[in-house]
Image 1 (cartoon, rainbow, N blue to C red):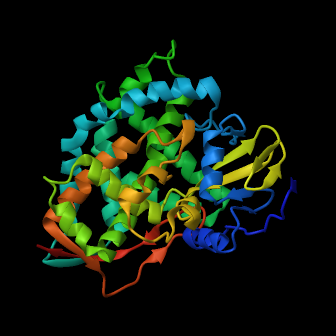
Image 2 (image 1 turned 60 degrees about the horizontal axis):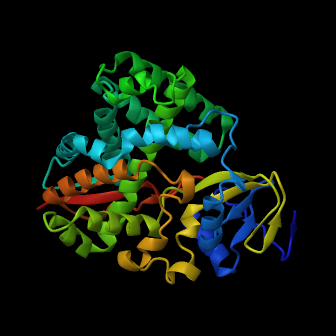
Length: 383
């Protein structure tokens, strides 16, 4: 690799993603050499440039089939058109009552006394993530505990970085998907996907499994981590709890702005990989063709060149530059679904309890390649 200025080395392995990015920002480094031959992009402008230039920065980085975001060009666009029909707001909005029911049951089962201390991630987050996903996809409720156990095993495997463990949990999840395909009712999202021929042909079995893996495997952990980050912010900024309780006055747009800003400050969606298709300049460096690149969203969302003090809470000022959900053609297609799920959960939770810091234990932060909180004890007090 050649560059117009030296690129520092800073391996993100075993680092807490926010601290990793903040350190590089403090050194004025928008990119760095990461693990192995990888280059990590932490600067906001640089991350945005890479994410929006899908021709120069290819997403075809995995030896496994990953639909849609492991595809490029028209193939990616065709699958996005197919999947967007399932994830459009007017479609997923039809599941709002089911998400409210999933939230209500989760909270009722955990808030068993006037004051309880629970783990925002492993108990509240993981349980609700599984129940809301089962409701959306039409999977049998008998799968709940199996999926909760899988979320825990997957998080531990991802944290370990051991290929054997990550391969084992991937195989287990494929088995879960195959069982779900066999047991889901005919009118479910899952079965409609199997019958979908909007590409001009039926989907192949491997394609169906890849889509469902993308919709579920990553999203289960992501929803749990989001809830951990959001509850941490509600503890830190109690006035947010008061505002969100005024649900009849909080528009969907305001709710999304609040959630986006909370997640910008502490994004659990850490990074995505790319590979350069030819020589390209980014962050003052000249990268060759075939260069492995990691766009570090958590760091880019805390770039002081763009956001000033990264921990300052300012939804209105920061909304236009927020990269929590990515950017460009590979931006997350499931934001509307996630926000609908989050609103159901937050509305139900704050109607019942006040959230405060737990007196008995401190939380534990996640490390690369996962962001947010590994565990976060919070105290829930009935209102």
